[in-house]
Every structure is written in structure tokens, then in C-alpha cells.
Length: 566
Image (tube, rainbow, N blue to C red; front, side, top):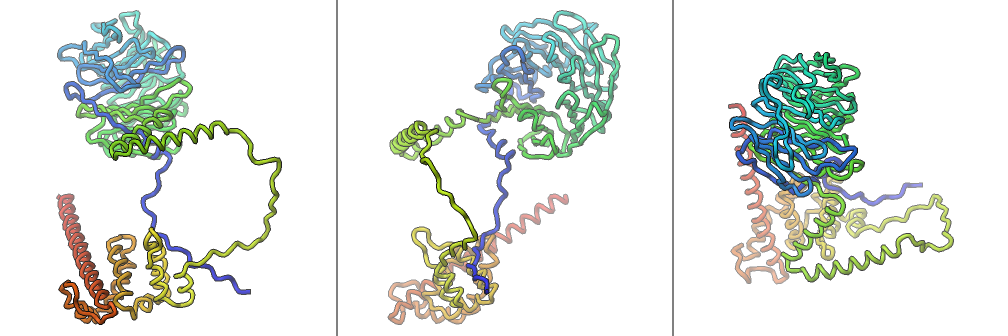
């Protein structure tokens, strides 16, 4: 038994840009960018969030350090709440960080002084300075996440110290770094364990629980100065050295993975999406989002200047905290805040945008009427939710090897199957309703005719009136990059077939001068010839414009190539 003749499968245009991945779609929801300049255009050197508070309310603020001041912003409104500028005349603030209850701000400085401020009154609660304090600039201070009154600091004097708010001298001092110590943190889940990074190209692990033990417990060597450290878990640490980010396994005592996604030095690290994503910011102006499973880049942002600091500001209860803001500090003194709307805030913002668009278009009353109808239907669906309207029983359908019903062929498909190629092309070029000519059907037919070597037969022997739809379709798609090869073949065949008749049609059209009432044979051929002549002229002009643009583009590429060589 012969197989059934199937309908010609439709030809689809090549796919455009790849669809967004889940990560790209998620990070594109960080919109509504707010750019806040620093008071003296000083670089934003630190953006710090308070540690999670397991016993009390979480502080809804974050600290931004720039120049000689620390500014406190609200996570809810993105507005400035307080400014603390009680530093020396020639001093520069460093690493401002809030305690987990938000009541005390800790900050270092280029003078070597570590200060604790009351965020309510801006009063200085305590200063650590003098003989038993740091002798050079303090670039990093951090609160102990487990002890409310304990903190650590690291300085350019190559020491690491642990302090208590109630004491004037350091409880513990770590000695071992051979250059500036510019980053450090407490290891979560490990009471009293501190990790620091230095310009001596090392990351060192310290046990601060024993006052007499002032030497590092573990040392990791890098190939460049260490700019930032971020704990991923109780046994994993990410360290930024040069343009690489190294994932260190503290239990195995070795590097587990090296991320090389930046062209310049990586200056800041942050975690997002409940520690499922690692963000890196560098001097190349890029923020890269990495999957913490495969360490591949899943999303990215580009900023106009080098990035000095980076943080993800979350909000909500500790059990279900969501990423709210992407905060990025730039070298030019700008603080960039991108906000992600979720839940009811997202719905409210969408409705507000729709209402504003309707107001600008003068259709506010019509929008309100539609909104009332939608609210009424939504109320009916809510009232009937959970009810079963299917009845007592259901039909049982037994499926077998039933033959699928043949799809009805289009007129041009039937003509193509019968070998009437010219008629098939005429039927495909006929407008169908309000849609007009179906481009996919015409492309499918032309491709099939070319494969059958029947394209010349379909275009030959046409009068001026039958040639007009073909020329109109060619004129519309001659500049489409996806269809240019097929359209080019059609144009070459048309010129080969009808170049000799263009002069005759010009005479029939009255010399081609465009005057009404020109020549013709009484059957309307003059109108068709005039339209053919006009379409050919437009086609010639469009091809010439495209060729000129291509020539200019090649010239521009040549200039750019010379600049790259230079």
C-alpha cells in the first residue's frame, strides 16, 4: 500500500535571539535604577548590611561609606536616613557596618582609629586609638555574628585584632601577614574563627578563642593581592585576587575552583538568592552572577565606571528573606540601586503603569470600565472556586490506532501538488482577509519551487498585472536579512525573463512620464505596465541605498580595524 502524500511542511524563518533563561529573567526584574551621588564625589568604598538577627527584629537599613562619612539608607524607601561624619579633618572613613540590631555603627579610618557610633544620636560611644591600637589605616571592621559586643579589625600595620565594646585594649592580636590587610570576616557557624586577606597574596585563617595563639592556623597562597573575602558556608570561602575568584575549601585545605570571568581586578563579592548565586564586581565595570553549583556565569550587568563595592540588600522575615535591591558603588562616587518588585508591589506597579498609559492616551474612562468588569469576573471566579461542576460520572474513551484526520489543504498547496506552479504562486500572493499576504506561506512555496527547479516556470509568461504582486512582495522583503538569498534569486529570474519587455511596457504606460491617461490597449494593460515600471524604479532605488549603506559599513569597519592596530 502506497504511503499517504503529506502536505508540504511550512517553512519557518531562522530563529531570532535565544529566549531568556530563568536567571536572566530573574535579574532583569531588578529595575527602577536610582543613582545617588556622594557628597564630595568620593568613591563608594563599602556597602555593608547588618548580620541576620536570630533573636530580634532585623535592621531595615544598610550603611554606605564614601569619603569622610558613612550614610545610612532605608531598605524600604531607598532614602537617606542618617549621615555620620564625625571623623577627623584629614581622615577617611572605611568599612562602615551596622550591628545586627541597627543601633551601633562601626567604622575604621585612614588614621588607624576604630570608632563605634550610636545611630540614634550620632554620638561616639568608643574609640580605639593610641599605643594599644592600630598604627596605620584600618580598611575593614566586622561585628561578631554570635557575640553582640565583639568585633574584629584589620589594618595596614599587618595585624588583625579582636575588640570588646566594654574594654579599651584588644582581646586578641593576630600577627603573620607581611603586607596590608584589606579584607576579613568572621566564619559563620564557627565561633571565634576569622578569615583575612592581604596584599601579601595570602588568605589566612585565625582562631581567636585563645589569647596566646596569635599565629594563623591555615594559609592559602594566591597569585595577586587579595581584595575581598566572602564566606560561602562554615567550610567554604570565596576570595578575590586579581581578576580571579578562588573558591577555598577549608576542610580539604585547597582551592576547589577558580572563576575567571573578569578582565580586570575583582574588588567585591556578594551572595544572592539564599546563597545560590555569587555576584562579583570588578574594575572592568561588570557585575557577574555565578551559579554556586557549576560556577558558570548566568547573568551580568554593565556599569559606566569601575566598581569598588557591591551588596545584595534583602528584606522580609529571616525564614523567607527575598532579594530587594542590587546596590553597587562606583569609583565616580555614584551609588546605583536597582530594585526588584515582587508580589503585591509588582502587581500594584503594573496596574499603575497601565492606568498612566490609558490617561496619556485619553482612554482613562474606558480603562476604568474594563477594570470594573475584570474585578466583577474575578469576584465570580473567587466565589465559585473549589466547586465541582463535572457531574457524577465521566465518559471512558478507549483510544486505538485511529487515523488522524487529514488537514485541509490550502488552494496554493493543491495547485502545487497538481504541478500548476504559476497558479500556486498567484494564490499564495493573494491577501487573506485583514491579515494580508502570509509571508511564511510565500517563503514555503518559493523554497519548494526552487528545490523542484520550477521557480522559472512559476515566474515566466506573466502579464504586467500578474507581475505586480510578485514585485510588491520582493520590494517589501528585499532588505530582510533572513530572506535576502531567496529574494535575490527571484529578482535575478525576473530580470532575466522580463528585461526585454520593460521598454515595451514603458511605451504602453505612456513613455513612463507618469501622466494620467497614458497609452494602453484598452484592457487595462497600461495601468499594469505603469505600476510595473514604478515598482522596478523603487526596487532599483532601494537596492542602491542598501549597497551604499553596506559600503559605508565596510569603511567604518576598516577605520575601527586601523584604530585597534594603532
